[in-house]
Length: 195
Figure 1: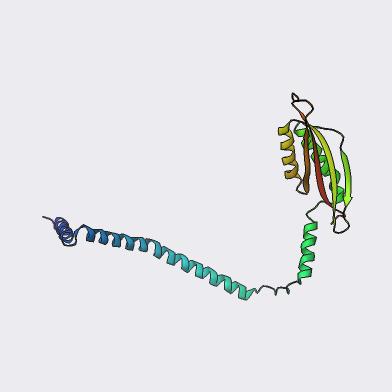
Figure 2: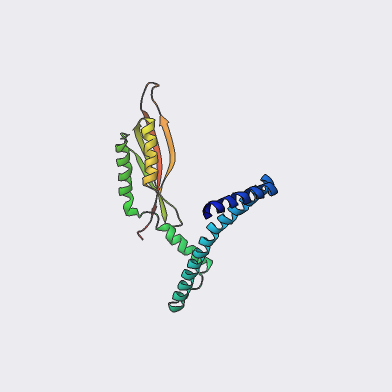
């Protein structure tokens, strides 16, 4: 017999003897312990190298900050200054009064794109006493089917984020009519002056 065959026979004998002494529960515990050690070695050692890389990166960043320090931050603004800044930023989200005809054009093009007939509408400009925002109300009568009107409303609210739907009313003349007369009351929120 060769040396390898003898080593293999000895390993088999040692395994049978260990199985006889420990039984199946003991063997299962040994297998579980060995697999746990294998998993720890497979997970922890790669994590240690990754942590070492992160430490090196952190030290490099700290060294760069020491060489090029960040400018000192300004003192925190008072609550009134912060509120005024937020209001200025809020106002810039609304289009200026000069953009109102363009927004009405978008409304009419969307209605036309959905196959709706826009009939004569009523428009009014309402201004509040305080603030920089005006309300332009447009009562737009359209004629078409319900699905097209629904799609128009969704597209208008998506395309014009400064527009709110104030009222939606349907009127059907006869029960057999396929189209309904719809009145959309839209509110356009616009700035008084350009930013």
